[in-house]
Length: 373
Image (cartoon, rainbow, N blue to C red; front, side):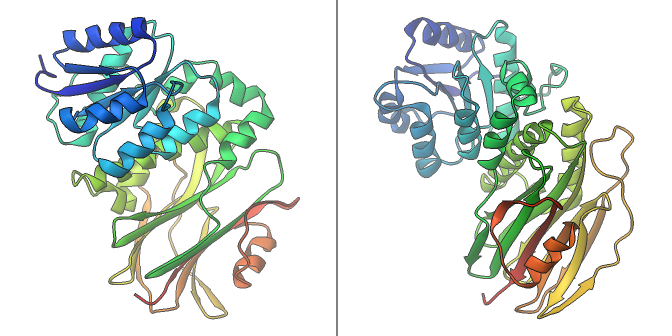
């Protein structure tokens, strides 16, 4: 079979379910090792060097989140899939933050879903050659397993849950490292922000950031946040494994993101600008879809708009190509992304960054500055 010779570590404290998943994985051709908790899994991890880890979240001694943290330190190239009955979306969000490729909710009424998740995960890592197969419609969508569970309705109808989940996904509001400075403000005028952003290092050389606006607004903005975080997690991990540089290519990333949003079936569109800073050369690649997020070059107190052509937002089946642009920055210069009310411009010019905040006007700003290397 196509999975012959690959090794999977199944970490599950329920012996019946662990045996069920193990037997099914064996039928797929995988070599299976089981563990009843995270501590036992870590003890076996080094000996078997698995190609994939299937992990529950709630276990004695060491839970799934602690195990994922340990794996991300010792072997970040090994992908993981969470299989859990935990209805706490905050734990699922934490698993995504720790680099989990996907998660499935118990009970698994159709084990073929598990097979497809494994195939998609291993194909995406690039470390193993898995031939293409007909896909389960929509399975590439990272939010598919959320929609299969009650958590989708929890987000859709429970504003407090949606707000708490979303808030966990935003990065530190101010970051300073060698070669760059990053800061942002998201001013929300409703419980769930329809402005989204992130900023993250990509190896020792690159820093990536984006600012986006979701339409329509509402609780589903939190769901879109989860989809986007999962999507960027996967591409970032793929880059760290040396298998793909898509994360560094704004054109490619926005094209992929459009596919994900269309497949999600949420009916949302996204105005987004995505930046990739080469900290060595100080060159920034800019990808832009939609017209709401404006792009500026900042030198001291001077803010100059970049004249970029119009492009439709992502999330449309008839979507056309995004706008791509390159800009070289001098030391101390910055790219500034602005959307919404004047307060966004005022705070970025004062370099007063506080992350997610309340304001009746609504708006967003993000600054990525080139600093001493």
